[in-house]
Structures are given as C-alpha cells and as structure tokens.
Length: 632
Image (cartoon, rainbow, N blue to C red; front, side, top):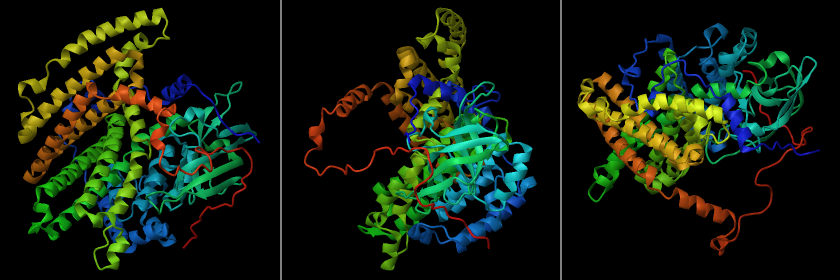
C-alpha cells in the first residue's frame, strides 16, 4: 500500500481556488462597494422589513418550549452525547427540515427565521446548534437546493426533512483549506464511480445516513474530471466510521474520521456535474456561514444575561460589582457587541432572503466578525465572574450556586474561529473579493508572468478606471454633513463614509507598493478586512436603530459605533506601523532552529505519533464507530 499524497505547487493551488470562486457580480453588493470606498447605505437602508410568517413564529415557539424544557444541555456536556430522544423530538418538530422546501416535507423557513432557530437551540446546547447547522447549512439539503436535480431532491430531501441526518465531507488528514491536494478519488466505473479516501472532521459524520463527499475524478478523454461532489449513503458497503473525534468544546458533537474503500456511488448521485465540487462547496458556504454567527449571537445574549444578573447580585467594596467602572465597561462592551453582531446577522439574512443583492462578502464578514467578537465577549464574562467563571457548572451546583457554565461557553465558542474557514483563511478569502475590481482591470500589470501584450491592454484599462475612480476617494457625502435622516447616528454614518474612502486609498497604496507580492502581506490584508467588517457593522447598527426609533436602541448603536471607531483607529494605524516584517524574519529563524535554546528547561512534548496522520488506500482495519438512532 502506498500513502496517498498529492503534491501541488502554490501556483497550482491558487489556480484551483481561483477557478472555483464565483467571478461575476450580477447583483449589487454592499461589501464590494465598501472596499471600493463607497458606503452604499441605499443598499441596506431603509432597514428591511420582512413580512410576518405566523407558521415560522409558531415553530419557533414550539422549538423554544421543547429545548427549554426537554433538553438537558448540562447532561449533553457531561455525557458528550445527545440522547436519541432529543433526535426524535427535534425530528417531530420539523427541525431537521427547517431549510427544506415544503414540497419535500420541510418547513421552508427564511434565512432569518432559520438563524433565529439556531440562536434559540444553541443557547441551550451548542452541540444541538452545531448538529442542526451542519445538517442543513453545509450538509446535503443546501447543495441540493442550489445545484441538485429534481430527481435528487425528490429522492433525498424528504428523508432529511423527516429526521435523517446529513454531513459534509471535504477535509482530509493532510488537506484543510487547500483542496488542490485532495487525495480522495472517485474512479469512473460502469454505472457510476468507485470512491476511495479518508475524510477528517466530518461534523455529524458518526450519525449521518446521507453524506456530501468531495473527491477527485481523474481527467480522461471526453471527461472533465476534477473535484466532484457526490451524495453518498452513509450505510453503503465500504463506508467505515473509524473514529469519533473529541474536542476542547462542543463535547456532544458527533464528528468523525470516515474511510471509503471501493464504495460504489451511482452516476445519478453526482451533484452539479464533474469538476463542480469546489464551486458547490464555496457556494454552499456563502449562506452556510450565517449559521455560525447565529450561535455567536446567542452566546453574546446569554453572556449579557449572566453579566447583568451576576453584577447586580455580587457585592464588593460596599456596592454591586457592576457599579465599579472596571466591570461596567465590560458589561457595556458585551451589550453593545451583542447588538452589533445581531444587527449584522439579521441584515445578512434579510439580504439573502430578498435575493436582490450579492451578499457573499457580507456573509463572510459576519462570520469572521461574529466568531472573533463572541470569543472576546466570553473572555470578558469569565473575568466578570472571576473564579466562578473558571469553575465548571457542576462544581458550582455542588455547593448550591447557580450552575452557570461560563468556562464551557468559552470552550464551545473557540472552534468558531476555525470552523468553516479559519479567521486567517477568511481574511484571505474576503481580501481576494475586496480587490477583485482592481485585479480585473490591473491584474496583468502586477502579474510577473503576464506577457507584454496583456500588460499593455491592462495598462489601458487601468488608466481609464483609476482616472475615474481615484478622484471619488477625495471627497464624498460624508464630507458635507450628509445622512441627516440618521439623526443622532448621522455623525457615525458620515465618519464611516470617510473611513471607507480612507480604506480604499490604503488598499490602493498597498497594491501600488507591493503589487504581485501583496498576497503575501497577510497582516496588511487582514487589517484591511477587519476595518471593512467594523464599517459594515457601523452601517448595520445605524440602519437598524434608526428604523426602530427606540431611544434605548439608538443609545446602544451610538455606544457600539464609538467602540467600533476606536478599534478602527488602532487598525488604521497598524496598517503602516507594525512589526510584520520583523515578525516574519524572526519566525524564519525560529523555524530554522536558531532559537531552540528558548525551549530549554522544560520536559519536551511527547514525540510519539505523526504531526499529520497519513493514510493508505484499502479496507478499514478499525472497528466501525458509527451511531444509528433507532426509530421511535
């Protein structure tokens, strides 16, 4: 047996990713315009007002009652196990079909109501939120909704709406965000394909009966080949769940290592055609990413409730701790951040629901922003609670105190900065979209491999574009006291408009300075994206609070904007005043072994095993650890 390992160059990996991204902009995009220095408030304001949906409200009420009374989140955490009866209860409510069209037995909820449901369920047990999210946001229902045939939908979606669980299998032991190196293969045979490979970190993988699997189809005469998406039966011959993975948090998560050995997949189970797998994965994630910030919003709301109640009751130095400025500033941060995150998420959901805007950048921004800010919220809550924040819920309950698992919250939230695109990958993904206009007109100029003729044509395009665009960055609506309809918040919208133009100027300066090397300036690009996320958040809260007109919301929005502007000021300074180059130089020395003396004086980490596990084709030698939920 030979170990499967695909070696590809950086250029090949880039080409695969570039070919899979959606290159056209058919609809308006607030995010795209933002990075070009245009604060298009008309695309998000007036604040959307979706039509009431009594069926959705009824479902949410039933879901809230069920998870609030029948689901024991502490037991799921303690036992690392979601009970069978919870699967049954959720299925009876229709929770596994929230995003599935009613024609196939689902509820057909909007993105907004779906995310409200995840916020609700996740506040009781983040493991249940992850179960429902992975099943519907990236599992079989979403790819079939976007790319499936009518026959595929009729065959699979009713099963999933009724309570069968699905999973999404892309990652491999040595392949994460670089799918060009994918080792799983699907070899064409009579009537279909033979699937071989090992997939890692498949959320729901141990319980799923239907899988979306990405595998490489070899190119051949008359056959496109490439990364392809398949619907695979979880109980097909040759499928083995070799391990259930255990994590820092989300202990109830059913996450697997799954091996495929000569698994036959019928040709009619291909989604979207050969070579479309990565494009399907990226398109699925455009909306799928909204599920993670939904649970981050739930965590922020839960944190605010705990911080408020605790800080009223806990007395230190003669008064409640919440009245001490050191704690009060943390409470204010949690409250303002919860409002900002919820505003961004709701806006993204409504943009997705009205189908009039391209929201791929906005969805990525809210995923990035929500996962980072929710982690800070949880960290501040630990500090507010002091020693009790570090103590487990069971330990607190053992001495008669409220079983408030803040340490669990911190552990559960940590994965969101990695799930469905790590913060570092999200920075690069959004940055690529942010500079798309520049690359479309001037890409050949900064590409050293472009021929002279292509550079000449690009020079003409770039000259025309920048002659029109650059003057728009000097003066804008925010310069002349516009946006009066935002009342007390107008000052923040004006500031954001000016900041958007500064951001565009800084981005252009970075491109002019580093040209083709800009992609390696990941610190710079990350800050550009983080500034864009903050500006999107300011725009969202100002639109929402203005539409509400409620003084308490306007006060929240005003504080959030001041906090956000402070963060932007730090990021703007760091664009050009940082230690990035020195950091990279020192890291190279560390990697070369120059500073191993710093590692002396400790017992070194264990040396057994591999840093990255390898796998060889063939039948599994491990016991099958799949779990099947018996029918009620």
